[in-house]
Amino acid sequence: MRTPLLALAALLSLTLAGAAQAGKPVNINRADAATLADSLDGIGLAKARAIVAWRTQHGAFRRVEDLGQIKGIGQRTLERNRGFIRLGDGPAAATPARPAAGKH
Image 1 (cartoon, rainbow, N blue to C red):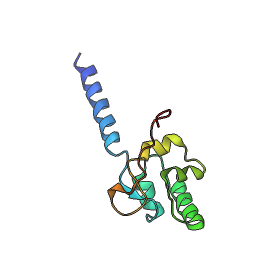
Image 2: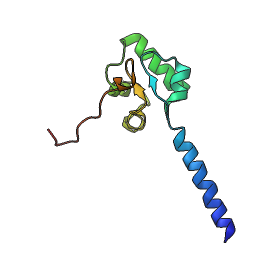
Image 3: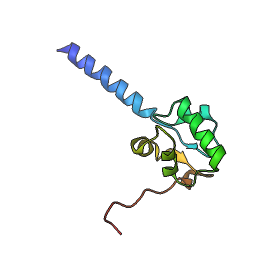
Image 4: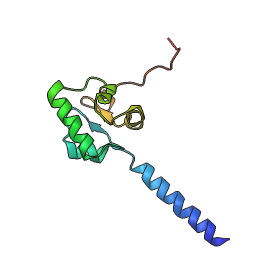
């Protein structure tokens, strides 16, 4: 009986540790590729380099959804990182959440 409880406790601690490292606030218009990869969940160095390249070619990101222009960054990745993505200076610079569908 004790072994299943220890296994459950170990699994729970690993899950909570992973959730705590899900992301860190980062300004996607200023950060370098290494910082983006370290800060955003599901964004590795290759995607982070693509973010920097897109930004260099097209200018600053104006909305969080603009990241969807980059191959391999889909809606789930955007939603998972929405609270960490900054577009300008300060914590309130990220795009506010969209209203629910059907609500005006």
